[in-house]
Length: 114
Length: 115
Image (tube, rainbow over all chains, first blue to last red; front, side, top):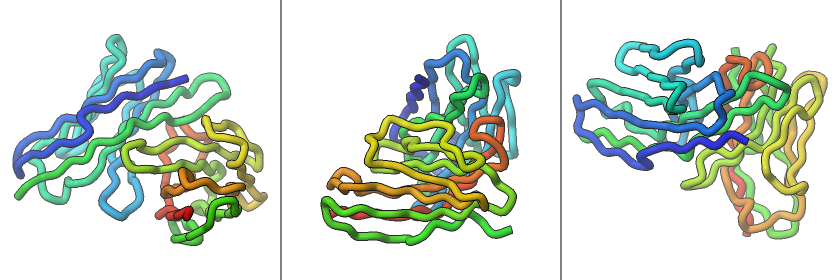
């Protein structure tokens, strides 16, 4: 089955700096890669996703890049703000066949220091 | 639209007991999936239900089971509770099958503590 590794497990940055979180996946058939943000005590929420036919996607201060050959994808947050502090989860999914499921990484705790 | 609703929010049970958790998806969503969240382990997939049928199951023992009703509401049951079952159980609904580019919408979870 799919295996998703996420690094780092914790990340501390100064407000205004950039943050990068990286994930690798094992199943070359995976073709959908969402990122979820979970603030303390709250539910995970989708912040951005990318499909395998796209190499990069941006939404304001966040962007995701995908390298299918290397089987890794990354979340980039620019001009970080204290409200970006949260746990971020990457996930990979195979939309082919009948065994659909999302496999999540173990999460990255991002702390943005004012 | 109302979001995904999970009940109860908190549960305290004793080893050996069983528990049932409930999830009401967003109106119109047909897929419900369940995840176990523990510190350091991220979100581990339990199972997915679509059209009242279990479509996929994660690597959890048979003590974990679930079902989905015709109105898409879902329940998850854990029998013979163990201390290691203590976790936050999250339910997520999506318009279509999980991973058909259909975003998951999570509930606030049920915090289960087994003593």
